[in-house]
Each structure stands twice: as structure tokens, then as C-alpha cells.
Image (cartoon, rainbow, N blue to C red; front, side):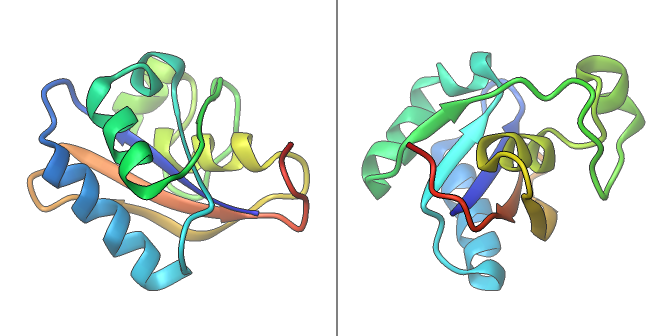
Length: 122
């Protein structure tokens, strides 16, 4: 399974979410699902992106998950180094690995990363 984890700031434009997902997919292949924090997964823009792409959207807890990249601000706020990377890993489950480290959108409003596992989520 290939999951794109997405983190974003309040008020992010939908086009920013589309763009950062495209950038990650260009490096890691097409996403089979999206994942983010529960409060982000409830956001209408992220739900719209998932619907446009016909992808499931998984709300996941990320606190305590180790990530390849690390933001001190995100660590203090969410208990992990990268929301995007941790969300992708959490949604994939055990044995997941990051295949595309977080990419930040040009406007700085969103990040996206990709993780993969051999497992299929049900």
C-alpha cells in the first residue's frame, strides 16, 4: 500500500494541497490513500482532494512516531518530527517505510510525504 501523508496550515488553498500531492507522486508513484491528523482529515479541502482523486482518507494519530525529517515546531505541537511523514507511516501500519520524505509546498502552507508497505489496508 502507498499512502501520502499530508500536513497543512489553517486556510491552505486546495490548489496547494493538489500541488504538493502531485510533487510527491511524481517521485513516489500514485497514492492509494491519503492520511492526516484527525482534525486535518475533517477539513473540507482535504476531503475534497480525496474525493477528487477517489482515495480513502485516513485520520491517524502521530504522536510518538519517529520520522526521517524533524521540525522542532511540529515536534513541540504534535509529538513527531513531521506530520506528513508520521501520518503516512501510521496509515500504512507495521513495516511501513518512507519512500518520499516530506516535501513543502512553495507557499509553505502544506507538506506531503509518501510511505509504503506490502500490506493492504482493509
